[in-house]
Length: 225
Image 1 (cartoon, helix red, strand yellow):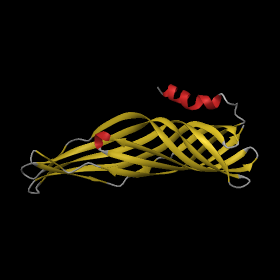
Image 2: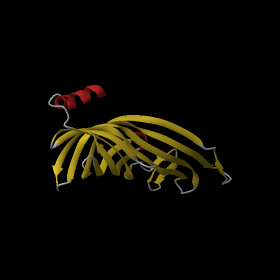
Image 3: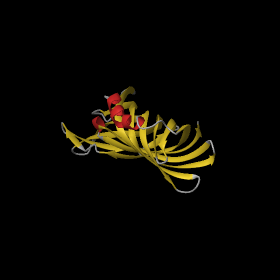
Image 4: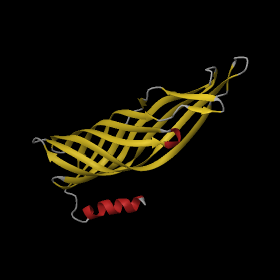
């Protein structure tokens, strides 16, 4: 299915002309994340369960590597690999009786990393003699890697807190999503360019009622071949 999608999207371009310019690049930078948590307060078997979350922190160094193919003064495509880094947060569900007496809690420490291969249409707009604006829209084929640790604490009838040993869970969720980007390309030498770019992607985790919007601001250096 992925190969068919790429063929439909980009084959018409490839048959029109050979690229008039090819470049290779690598970049790194900084990522940040907007999150939305929709876990409601639940009542189950006389227990009131209240979720709470820490703030989402971005970890690891995001980076990308890519190849660009220019077919026209104002149009090209770009293919590459992009790693958004990882995010980390803690979810706690506190349980109590309907009278407000604590009965325990469940703690989930989550770490989610996002990466994948992408291909994008690129539009070029000349701003100044050596500066161009790039607008990009394409598809990224990747996965979210989840690494979670958790523990359960129960308060017994004698008001003693009993904590189970920490457990660990790790799994992947593949995706194919649209991706947008905008960048500034500076031609500081005939064969060398500097690029400042912002990428954006959205993904969700339905089983935990979580959704995320992740942004990656990168600084890249690329060479024209």
